[in-house]
Each structure stands twice: as structure tokens, then as C-alpha cells.
Image (cartoon, rainbow, N blue to C red; front, side, top):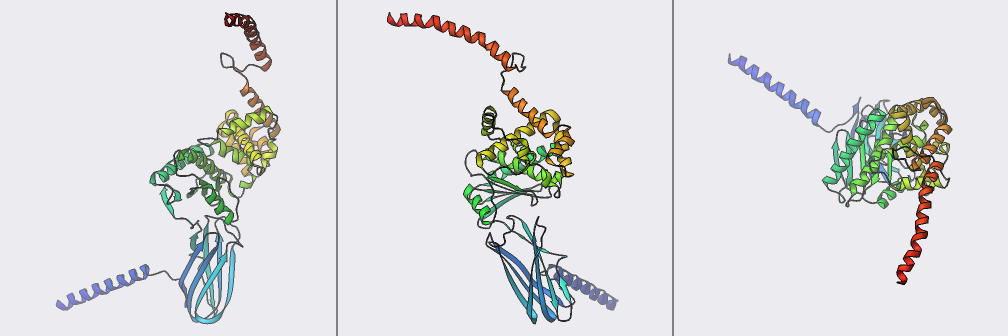
Length: 420
């Protein structure tokens, strides 16, 4: 009986030892291995807009002869690689510095990288089944993070408190829900919003990274939004302008699909983003009316492509595009907006897409929109109807005449009173 109990106890201890060994293997630092080749260590680090350093330490039962590094940024179709013919050895250490000044990568992208190692016995280890990733962020600054529901807000640590981040997160969540109620696009798996404290810091980041971005920018293929909002009174106004604008671009990208996003006309993409701003720029309406009154509105066909670089012309292009989208909403509803995005996703041309989706030519759409602007400027009747210009002039002409007559009578009387 005692012998049986001893055997049972011994068996239990073996099971416990086996479990400890398995757990030890699971919790040990990960190292890829295949037929004698082992990756002991693999890392990547970066200095924003300067360089990315990839390091590898590997061993093999036979001498390692060749090593390859592969890496690709999110949204980039091209995979870059580096090849080394190393001095044959059973243990090798590799360090590769990718110069971001000569070959920039998209800022705030995820860099995915993997290795291929060959030894003298013809054995090959490739780590592409479990690639590693590096978040290429602007690490010149320390960032605070606040995630919720697939959205993460990042802001510079010294320039904002938790209430600042929460305000941005709340605006982003509401914007995503409201905008997508119209577009009905698939929501990105993750959305990262980076808020810089000052425009010069954002400008410097984009220039250093080889990009020229304005006050706000969406990078749809990355699911990233970047803009500037100083941590000062009224910061929510900026957030309510930029966040809905840029989130619209992300959803248009999702609706049109990555392959067809390039077919969406600029006036529709930017027009939707501008029209969705919760706190629109009041100068849009002023500039739009000035251009209308002076006959300087831009032809809609010219806005099918990226807007002109001149600031004043570009600003007018944004104002016009937002107004055109509002006009389409009013006349064709959300279904009209979705129909436009769907035909452009199928590869329709700028002019052909309007005809196919709305049953009207681009030129006729522009004419109807311009007419609506003119009608909007005419004074309404008592019952709210717009009065044609000739009728309005005729109506006020009688009252202007009576007013002038009263002045002719009143002026001599006032002069007489002053003499007295």
C-alpha cells in the first residue's frame, strides 16, 4: 500500500515538473528556430525622420552564410530588403541602419519586418510567419494615450491633461457614428489621432518626414489623423473642426475601398469632410459669397483633381466643395451621396460618376448649385418665398421714394429749427 502511494506521489511530481517545464518554455523570451537555426534576438528602434536601426543575433549548428532583412510600412505596396553575405560563423550579429532622410517612410505608420537566415547546410529560417512590428511615431516628444472603442487619442504629454484627451476622444466617437450614419462604410479596425501642440511642430514633423501637410491631415491607409490644437481656452472648437473633417476622409477611403479611393473626385472627398465639420470656419461663407458676387467661382470640373496650392484659391475650393455637397444632400439626400461614392468606387470618371449616380451632368449640377446660391442671397417674402430680383427692386423702390420725399420735407424744417 505504501509502495503504491509512493508511486502515485512520484507520478504527481513528474506531472508538476512537466507543467513547470512547459510554462517555462512558453514564458521564456521568444526565439525563432528551424532545423538548428535560432534567432536569439531581433529588435528595431528609430529616431524620427532620421533612421531606423534593425538588429539581429542568430545561431546555427552549421555556419550561417547569408542573412536577409525585409520590411514594409503600412499602406506601402513595396517591400524593401537588405542582403548580407556574412563571414561564415555559427553565430552572427547584424545591424542595419535605414536612412530616413534618403528614403523616408510614412510617419505614424506601422513598420513590419522579418528575417531570412541561411546556413552552410542549406537550411533556411524565415520569420515572416510571425513578423515583428515597429510603430514609427514622432518620438521627439513624449505622448499621452487614451484608447476607447478602437479609437486612440495621442497628445503631447506636456501640453494637455486627461480632460483634453477625453474631449478629443468624445468628439471622435460621436463624429464617427454620425458621419457613418450617412456613408455606411466599414469602420477601420483602429483609428489613431495625434494632436500636436503647435503648428510649427507639426510642420517640422511633416517636412522632416518628407511630406507637406497642412493644419490637419488624414492618412486613410494608416487609419491615422494628425492635426494641431493648442492646450488653451476654446480648444474644443478646433477639435470639432478638424476631427470630423479628417474622420470623414477615413470613412470615404473605407467606402470607396483602398483600390478605388483615387477615383473619388477631390470636390466630393474634401466637400464631405468640410460639410461634416461640427465647427465650420465662418470665413467659408464670406469668401464663397464674395467669389459669387464677383464672378470668381471655380469651375467644378477643375476641382475633380487636387486643389490648387495657392492658399486663397485652395480655401475657396474647400468652401465651394462643402457648399456643393450640402446642395447635393438637400436635393438628393444621403442616398445621393452614397450613390456617388459607389459609382466612383467602381471606377467612374469625375463627370461620368455624377451622371450615373444623380442622372444629371456635372455642368448641370454646377448650374443648379450656382442658381441656389443666387436664390439664397435674394430677400424673402413675408411667407418665406424668394422674390425675383426685378420684383424685389420694384417693391422696395416705392418705399425708397417715400423715404427720399420725407427727407426733402424734413431737412428745411430741421434747418429752420437750428436757426431759431
